[in-house]
Amino acid sequence: MSNCFVKPTSRSEGEILQSANLAYRELRAATRNFRPDSVLGEGGFGVVFKGWVDETTFAPPSGDKTGMPIAVKKLNQEGIQGHREWLAEVNYLGQLSHPNLVKLLGYCLEDVQHLLVYEFMPRGSLENHMFRRGSHFKPLSWNLRMNVALGAAKGLAFLHSDKANVIYRDFKMGNVLLDSNYNAKLSDFGLARDGRADDKSHVSTRVMGTYGYAAPEYLDTGHLTTKCDVYSFGVVLLEMLSGRRALDKNRPAGEHKLVEWASPYLTSKRRISQILDARLGGQYPLGSAQKAAALALKCISVDPKARPSMEQVVAVLEQLQDDKETVVTGGGACGFFRMCGGGRQQQQQQT
Image (cartoon, rainbow, N blue to C red; front, side):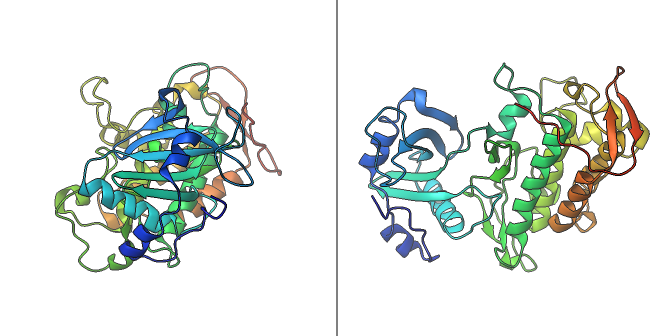
């Protein structure tokens, strides 16, 4: 297994299948026979297990939970669609490299077994930090939320660039993973599509993705463009601002769909504070919050042409990093704010 982490260099399905470079028995050993207590998460593609390999040989370690941690995704054996998603994942992550994309370390195809091996992301998904309760998941500070948003935006901007030409198609909180320093990386490329046909007839008869995040024009017509990803980003940004899920039927009537409920508040700077997550405790710079809300509103515009590009989104979020407005600790639902001259706002560290 010493050379098992060589990335594929071809988009050919035949070559991808022939170059599968990990042995099933070794991945089974690395995950301790895919034990339930090794499960990191589960989605439509399959179950993700935590495993360990030797840092030098990449073979399963001799000791228990020693060596380098990895994440092993085991495909649900559901036939053609699952196989296509596995191929897409290998095809894109196997060739793309960026600080804000999860690294694909290797993959396995033996009989009906389809597996993918990724770098391990210690902080898990953004979704868990935003919506799971418990001592392990503390509310993310304003600065951390904006840092995560910026990292995710950079990942999407890279995918949309001429270097990659990829439409992600399934941008959501569950697919944004965090490393030990809360740096965001995009994962799960099973629904990604080649974006080079973006300006042509890129229409799918089968709409894929996650309800609540999909752009309205994609749902109506099946027409897929990079602006569909921008819409999805706007929904996620709105989730981060409000602390509410994109779709939550447990909310009162009229509040099930986050975009519909929040949009009227986003159009007024004075009303922004009414939708911000109470778990922020009023600790956020109001001016930055207003700018972030205005950005979210542009991203979720019904008209795709009115949405910014992801490069423009990155530029706005980078500007927020240099915002000189500082939070002053105080009571009240919205906190107190002041403008201080000079200096970059210090990052709030979270343990």
